[in-house]
Length: 431
Image 1: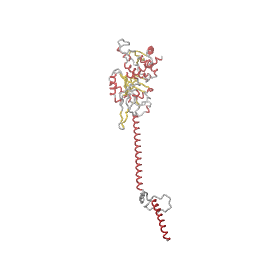
Image 2: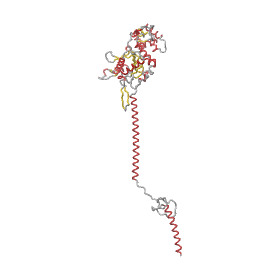
Image 3: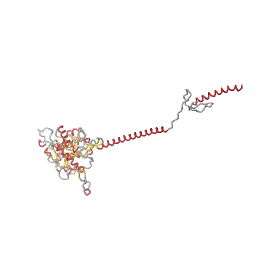
Image 4: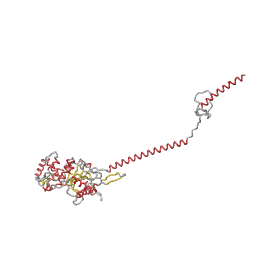
């Protein structure tokens, strides 16, 4: 019973699939699809599924011995009763299930096989399960009429960092201009605005701009820009697919190329506002490396030709936030330079003021008196040199001619002469 429920879930999403594809999505650990084939037979007996063809399409029948390449496999789809049962298993409203792809198997469903292979490559790479996907999802381009852009697949896997991803599979069967037109239709869908359904019509104001239409279909994505878009190319060789991707990028630059905002001597940022985040790959590369491997080429300025993991590819370069951080750093550096210059200027001014004050003080000061050298030959003392030893004799005061020691010596000699004269005069008086 569990196998039947899981099979209904897969067919409810993919619309048409082989038993092996269903196995890869719900029983990837098994190598034999017998359990799924048995579940399909039980569901067929209950009127829930039907097999209308095989992967060989009109060119051959199942098991034809003259076919080359991979063996043909039966294609299975849902009946109306099966579609209702699948909706219950997926927990979706019937209007969200889309059609049954009735008769698609008779032509081999080559495009559906490519979409299925893409979804299997994602899930095998750890991104989402079958319930995270929807296929053939219409997005209206106007409020009236049937004009819409129909997404091959829509992934909602917030836990994997992908709250919303549109996926297109190109099999190289139509001119690349048709593919470019579909990308332009996505841009028109993203640009379309409608009245906010959360606001009662009685409270709406005339001329009110409303909200983006896609946000009414996919609320609470927390996306800051338009939903990303992934193109997966298949159906040709590597060189042909590479050229096709190059042509698509050249034809659609107006929808993905960011505006280059330049400020501060050439520095600036890339403004991705109202631009489609676009990545490209081939189905072979996706199957080989998985969504988290070097699989995707981001179509944007300054990305180069390297393949990147999906989340890395959707990370914008030269963002406004990074520019603002650089601008903040530059302003801080300029402020620091200005502060240093002001400090150096103040220090220089203080030094000049100090020098000027010293010069003024020197000019205003009274000149120091000039003291002459002692007149005694051979004496090197100044005339104000004091008598700095104890003496009993009377030393003449300073005279501005002789120093203290010389005056002391002279007084000492004079004392001796006066004594001699007294002795010489005394005998004459006695006589």
